[in-house]
Image (cartoon, rainbow, N blue to C red; front, side):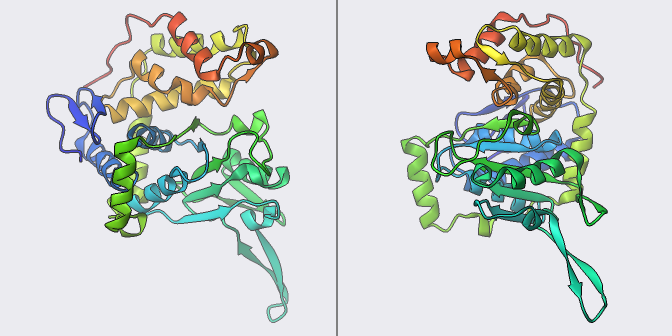
Length: 342
């Protein structure tokens, strides 16, 4: 478990370090570490996934988790909801889920002689869209429009989402039975796309032992509330980014547009997402300024669902991760990037 950091180092579980100079107010940082610790108590062996998911939450983005069933995608989402005392709704997406199930609907009340609005599942702080690619494109579009606009309209009345508002969506890998692929324009609305993968031997033993000992999302401690999360998000928005770091982000993005294996490169929305994620990552490292290493740490997760490979890449059997790693290697880091104000 994490303890108050000393000598610029904090730890989350075995083998994972966050390094940085503590330069921001301590209470927000302490709250962030408390959330990470509590989630790590029930999500075993997925420290990097926990950190990147939380970074996306702090950056004000939405998260797409793509992986095979049963590796803990839903548990991760529920753990964050419980640790932060957020109102959470979960929808298991199937082909018969309708937009009204998400957005709500109006029903005529005879006693009142008027229509009355019944909220849908979207009326919450954290919306878990389980297996989003198993429902119809119409329902997918309804949810993704709310993610983009921060509001929804039913019968001419527009309602704002609650603040904070987070969508964590899971999807089965491409080619799984009964899936409807999300179009590129809708994938672009997720800040990051991550995969959890199977646990190793030691972690899977810990998972089995933890379940038998009753460690689960149901008995988690609620360490902060929505107000504290908003304070952390405001602190992240104040992280300093030097112009040279902004230029570095843009050069990485432009390199995806000129890559011989990529048909469709990263959009300007992806540039903004990378900047915000790097700021959140710097915060979790205990710094009030962004370094090029922060950008590298989040770039692949921001980029991989936003690029479309061409036929040449498919023939050569080159993966998105390999291409993005090559982009990072070839674009030189800036040597001067400042440190903001302590």
